[in-house]
Length: 245
Image 1: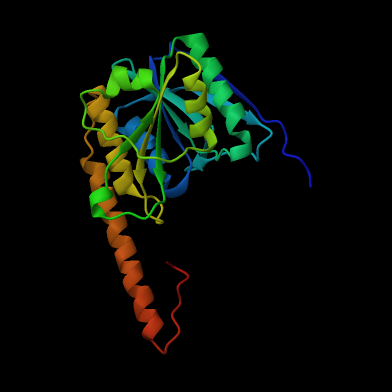
Image 2: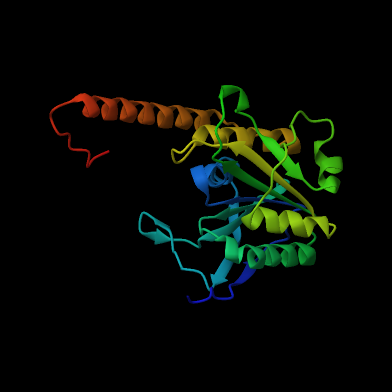
């Protein structure tokens, strides 16, 4: 079996980074990615940097025929955070190299905090629809004491989250993972709403989540209708064409 290549990541930017970098990556439920994408749009942030990757399968996303970098950094003069939007999936075997590139960049540019937004596909009930944290002690003291954000119970992190938190334990970088349960549907916009609202409460950022909540309702209605159609199809003697679903 061929060994995985040694991935190389590099960050370029043309601005003075903020103290805090908020990261949302492609993952189950796309909650973190949806959340940071929403922040960029509704805070009027502009692209000020990007991350390139060698040794991973390349993707170049595009919209309306216009391509963009798969991993981008956004900022705004009146917003106290920078946002990293990562559409490229980072596999577990490349997580350490990715985390090292982030750590080296933060050390060289005055960034003292990294916050990762993510969803986890665990069995949960309606009472569990909230955001939890896993954070280094220095981040807890600086940002979380006095808030109502609950700590995540016993468990473990893996991938990029584990690598960054692990490196945060051994450096002055404060690292926090904000995590919320997600459903199998993609995107889980409800989970994205919770992540954005929690980040807003921690940093005092004024974010109107109403449009995102409306989108979450539309997604829920879509999947409810889809479920009803599948149930009808299961009891029907007539085959159903599902190509458009």
